[in-house]
Length: 78
Image (cartoon, rainbow, N blue to C red; front, side, top):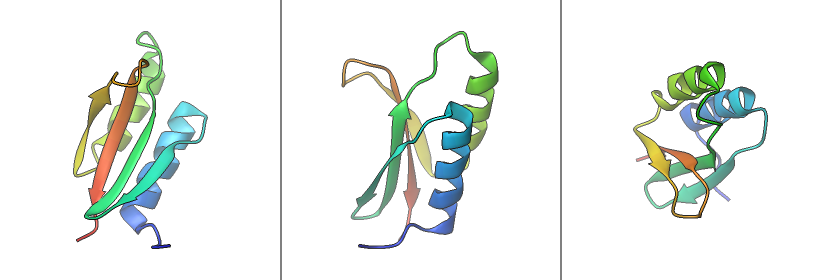
C-alpha cells in the first residue's frame, strides 16, 4: 500500500483533532482524499479549526450525497 505523504498526514491529524474523531483516507490515482462527517453548523470553534485545516489541501469542499453532511479534502501526490 502506498504511504501517505506528509501534507496529507498533517491534514488528517489536524482534522481528527478538530473533529475529535477519526477521518477516512482514500488513496486515489492522483492523490489522497480525506473525508469526515461535518460538525454541527453552530459549532463555531470546531468549524474554525476545520476550515483552517482544509485550506492546506489542494481542493476541499462539502457534500451531502450520503444523506449526512460531509467535508472532504484532496491532496495531490503527483
